[in-house]
Length: 307
Image (cartoon, rainbow, N blue to C red; front, side):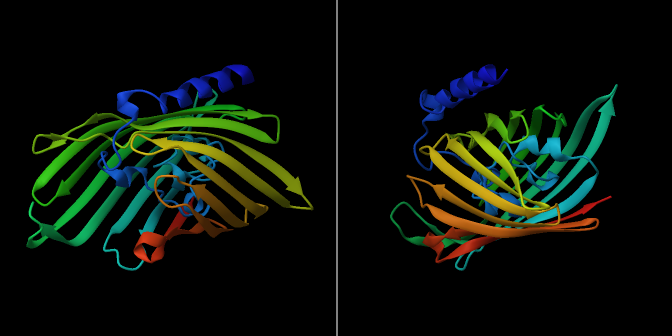
């Protein structure tokens, strides 16, 4: 089984290195907000940990997060951009466990919204033409398993983005699978945002399709403490391969300290960090990730309620 999983991951990963559809020019994909990290935990770990999801808050970017939904959870993710940026990003999510003839599963839903303030418009000669607005949103639903060893998940998503007076729509999907080896290691892979992408006023653009595969390790130490470490490869259709490293130290399931590093050859590498707190029914995650081009960083906050 392990050999089959590794072989499948290798074959899927090779798709990221070949084929016209996987090699879009930098900046050639649209609706990039669908590939931005939104949960505080994921942001703190630089997006690493596809094989080690923790809560339903991650489900809008990692479908395998459905494997963690052992009780209903409702919450919000809020991404606050660094100084000089005018974006506003909010994501609401819901996860609900179900059981069908003894088979443990979960159903999830999420809504994303990103809005931009006044954007300076210019014509083809560089002359200012006035300001305009832009916004995008998506609605998704998914189903997945909650097994102790092997898990699968699938998500369907409808998205829309409007820039000035032009609107494009997309019908996209996510799929993923993971396999846990003993008590200490897990392998996982996801293919996200594949499907149909509309155009803007007759101009074709590509969806932000991405492949991510990784391995995670789980190591208990002392009493009631444990450490998680993840190494992932990430490839979006318009980027080179990214190397993602992430880790966290947990005290039971109540407190977590997190750090990550992303090696991005085509953009900007950086170190991220954050914390997580679980108090009764309330769960909270915070993550900070650098954004040097905007003289600051992003702040991701996730607040959920389990009931």
